[in-house]
Length: 102
View 1 (cartoon, rainbow, N blue to C red):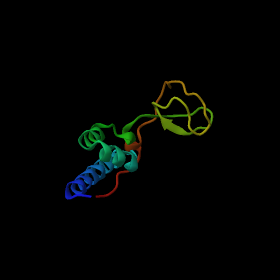
View 2 (view 1 turned 90 degrees about the vertical axis):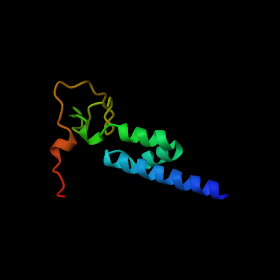
View 3 (view 1 turned 90 degrees about the horizontal axis):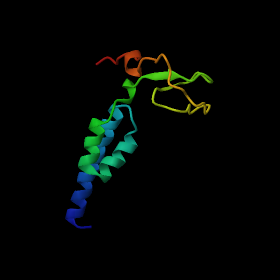
View 4 (view 1 turned 60 degrees about the horizontal axis):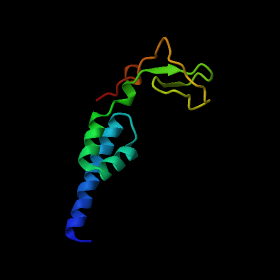
């Protein structure tokens, strides 16, 4: 592999690392955002930065198994119950979870 190819791999690796880190901070999968940012460097990292914070999404409770799922989920992943849009939502995880001491 030439010096150019090795340099490109290093750049792609660091874009992937940055995208993975941003995705993880926002509550999503590090591996998924690493692969996206590695394969499509600038656009992947920009997408990770602009992606929503998963821990700030409203939630709801499944009426059958009582599992708490995201409001945008249409089917409960535990029991397979099709979910209707609720009248009342549960606060996001970010508001409920205590903040870590810095």
